Length: 415
Image 1: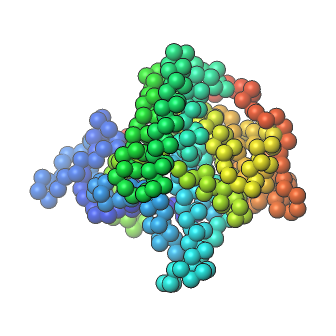
Image 2: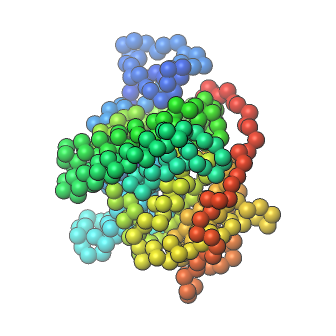
Image 3: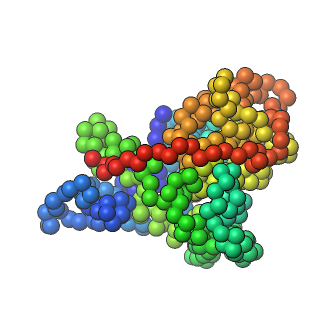
């Protein structure tokens, strides 16, 4: 398994190295760049840290998912058979995978003259992905006001206000995508798409934050240590960095990349549903997996996005019902709708990071998708004749769940 740190300035990828400090009391994400050769290395404590980082300059990284895809393709000139991603990976996964397949076609027909490797994909998996703002944005007020956990995290007045803003949102998103189609790299497209992105989340999202709930898990308060940042702490240990041969600290969220993507309104741009449809029609398996406690990229929006993928499988997928996901012989981990190579799974009692909450269920979904069996039971091989299709109700929203037991808070300071 290879972890891809893209765009540059995320993970262990970097443009130029700089020294800096992080004040965790102020923000665990913001890096203050300093020249220690002039100022000297400051005194550190449990909440004030020093390190080596990428430049944080938004001009030195990709500002669009499509640009990042080209960089990833150049890097991946070795091998790749499958891509698994989550969250903003709802943008990265479809765009990267479809670009790789388009490059294969260009290699085949001679458009690419220099030596290049075909990167044929077998499976694309997306966990709680924000794939398409147009089909997913209306699910935010619904998830807050009426969800399967019986938690009302938005007043009815706030809910109705959010819904009333939808026509303006649609107009803004149409302007964004029209400008993008005319000239994706233009300032006009950047302005239109960043305006659409800003308006949508101001009207459809902002009031949720005022109710003190965690965006990654509606069952938790806003101030929560779940899930703990143990992985980042591990990757930022000196001995681990030495073993990996990396000259800098691990960056889990790059403010430089975030600024660059915000400026172009990348989140509001389209193309990801079309890319998923193209991948399916090329024979790539697409597995969508959503924890049903996440708000950030929630399952209601993910379900709606899955129903709007344009593919030869679309009609069959929309007519398929929901079947129980048999995690093991005694436990049902959720519901799955599947037709052929396209599946959408709602996972019970899982937040934004399904594998952290429900590791066995996530592993079963991963394994079954990779091996090409049905997601529900793993007993039926795909591609062996007539398209496999799940049977059951058209909706699984009526199946309610209880918030799991309260988790003990963990005080963790990266060290």
